[in-house]
Amino acid sequence: LYVGNLDPRITEPVLAEVFSAVRPVVAVKIIPDKRQVHGGLNYGFVEFGSHQDAEVALQNMNGRSVYEYEIRVNWAFTSNGGQLQEDTSTHCHIFVGDLSAEVNDQVLSKAFENYPSMSDARVMWDMTSGKSRGYGFVTFRDRNDADMAIAQMNGEWLGSRAIRVNWANQKASSKARQDMHQQPHSVAGTLSYEDVRDQTAHYKSTVYVGNLTNYTTQDQLQGLFQGYGYVVEFRMQSDRGFAFVKMDTHENAAMAITQLNGAMINGRPLKCSWGKDR
Image (tube, rainbow, N blue to C red):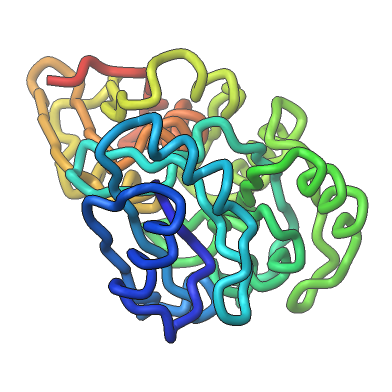
């Protein structure tokens, strides 16, 4: 299980003891929040001997107060990069637009931290210029929180601008496409994030990139994809005009497909879709 919102005072023995009160624990690992992405709160993983034990622990422990904070418990999965992460594939995603240049992941996360089920917040970056694309995405475990965030945060000021908040669907993606059209060498695709995410299994994370010129370099493509997560593996076929990019998570791969499909590189629009994992 993934366990988030951990008070920094919670040690691995303490976390093991807390969960052992429900079902026998096999192993525990806590990851310190060194970058303050989660507001200074840590997260970790608790392993059980069976799926049934984990299910019981999930039902009993999610929302429990440990020290001063309510912990968040969810299923974890192993990404293709070998890293354990919270499974956000079934979470609700909202689009946040009109972000000012100073808004980063931490600022965006803090703006939505009052919604208890928020699981991730990410600003989209242009890796060529190093500047924000002016929009991002926030995910929630609970749809009610996502609904409330849209209703309450739309039009609120964040940084030096009033933000626009909506569901991360076709309408939201249209705004992202408009934003991207305003940037040089960038033409966004016409794909909906949720449609792309649901096209294949949650453990798939390889993106097919086609319509490449024979002088497109790996560095050029990798710079684009690194704006959406960690690139685990890169397979380039320059002479055949395509490449395969393996991302760290299914969600990041889906976001890359959604946002990079149609993006111009060396005078050609990229064609992005799900590729075959090796």
